[in-house]
Length: 358
Image 1 (spheres, helix red, strand yellow):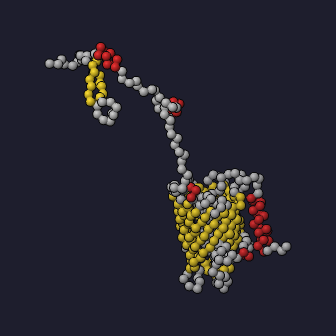
Image 2: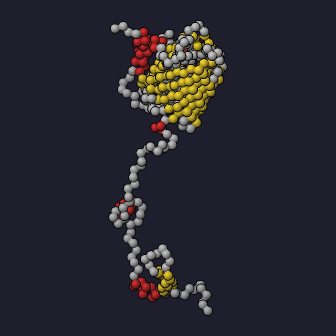
Image 3: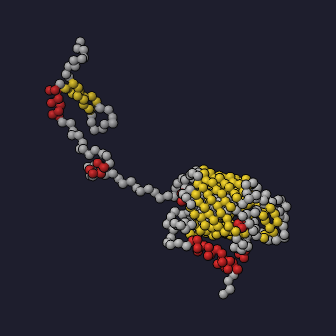
């Protein structure tokens, strides 16, 4: 059976590397490698380069990135524990189309799948398709491995094709997007990229990366456009600061010359800040038995279980006057419904400190 061009390319490049890097005994038992910050493409990663990190399952959020190269609005969704999807709408500056406005509006879709998670010496490994259903401005594919070097330092190394290799795909002038160019996947030669992130504290994260992106667009009619200024180097730097549990803001530099800013909001219905009202009810409260029925329960609850005081007995009234006491009665006021009067004992003994009555 004759294999297609795409199958041969996958078997010759991506699949062998995935098997070598992702091989290991047993299933990963460590905590899943979750993204520390989002890239400008709306995925867990560096600045322009991807990583093998994921988001918590069910996460839904958005990122907004602004720079001289583009304005990107990304909506990401963690559809499965290992599958991350991104829908992107952006304004790419420096590119002319039939409207001659100096920019184009581009829609694109990304998919990333984490093949294996980090486990012992084995890094997390992921494969991704970037802009595989758009016009192809950001079109590229990659395989990347990510590993924790220390509890605060995380490193990623990968191979990229297309834009990630600095070799942008030829865009068909008449193509309005929406058609996957399968024959271009994992083709055109690959180049390595890398990134390192340092989690300074619970809120601040610093990122440095090596990127091959040259920010150019090439069309089938022979026109070539430079998006913004050509990067002065392949090194990009970023600082991201997290606000609360769901918000993150960051600034970054591309090639040491172009400055950009980014804002991210991420939500997860499984870890909501406030209850939704759909949670299960707490366990019902068990009625407390009367102390007479269950003395042990009464003592456990801190209640005294001694029997009630004996009722008033008439012999006390005859015995107390012999000790210098007399009884005085007065009408009782509500809320005592059972007794018509109450009694009080008043001492009749002379008080040595009291003045004699006249």
